[in-house]
Image (cartoon, rainbow, N blue to C red; front, side, top):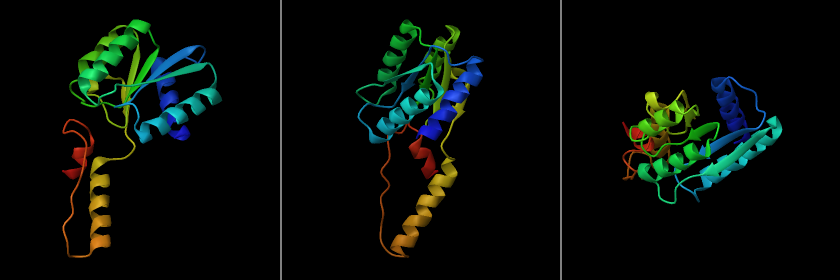
Length: 166
């Protein structure tokens, strides 16, 4: 995760057109207490320590909804953070709050699960959804053979995970 967040932080610095001196970057996750995002926060802290001059604010909502993320982002706008890196619960619902943050001089990028283009300056995807979906189906077929049934469990319909099923 540290390598991923070296890329995230470098992308923010590039988009922000700045150096890292005394920069506050908010890492907004889909929801607190999720192992993947806890690891991301740890990687973000390690990357920030390696670069220096960066404070990472790890935050997110208690519930995995766009409305809860909007509340978190409004709070970050009020705190005048320098940048927000968000994994969105709903790409379209978060576009206007991302635009609001950018209108106030805050650099906004999305990662893992993107915000619609008008609400961010860039999006960093860990992979492409078609590749993830086809790889998962191949792995299931190889492990099950030609018999049996399987179920696919995913996140909310607004999240990026269901796109892997298309």
